[in-house]
Image (cartoon, rainbow, N blue to C red; front, side):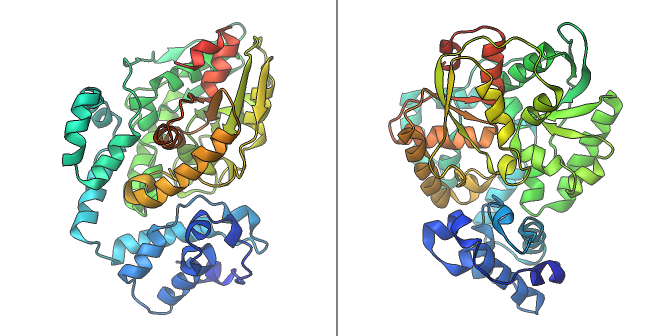
Length: 408
């Protein structure tokens, strides 16, 4: 924990109304200001206690406090340093260690996730699910509720050629959860880029970018993943790497330790890249009302809010509506909804209620974790509202598909 970064905080309290956990519980130590106070105590010699670790673990890492801080406190760096310190110096209870071992031996490995598709498809049979779920440990049961319907696997080619004159050669990050459970998003991303004039290079065996590990204080593990990913895309010889998952993108952007290790590659969120490239392909009408959900690691960490909205508004017939309190985290936050399921559920239910109030036909998100989290909360509330990625909406418009294509 950097004492100079800690000293930047003047304890003014501007962060309090931006912090989801403070909004939930009203506890000072569950606000950025309170957690910085605990960091200061530890730097001063106080060991990390179970209570301190609990307050640090309860932070979503959503970064909503960073843009509202008048003193420019780098809470994003502080919480990552703190989590690394917690992992080094605090011994968690056995059940917590077991859960974290399971998560970090599974989620950063796309092949392992793909092996789960068959068992999960069986589990999703209503009768089998009713019998098995009561037998599962609570954390595993919480994970199972987040799994989307298992669809036939899509295998992407290694190269997708540009339609018409080539404007760029880009790599595409396929991700871990995105690859295993949202392959249709990757497929749509590749088509959109190709229709906008890009040769899309999709290297095999990409592996994880390290974001989940980095956000959970597992710095050495994150470094191994990012080094390998950087080597894969450097060999691919691309002009830029396009990312369609907010959490991955924020860890790969400039200023992040992962980004520095993956230099000299340039990483761009899909919507950011498309806006810089400029539209070329014809947009066909999509008569839909949609609400766009700001993923925290896109809006707060990367500052990308206008680009996806502009791209959606370019589609004829599409009406864009804002979600009340849309800046508040949905509770996904990488692995948060796995390690802090109760708090995540509260935030998910709040987000679902706000989404429902818009009365839209479709919810649009730029992050797979958010899509899983909000879809699960909507389902609990008995709301049947389809959730799509920005790439899928653009793909439907560029290909002239009907609105039914986004309601499957």
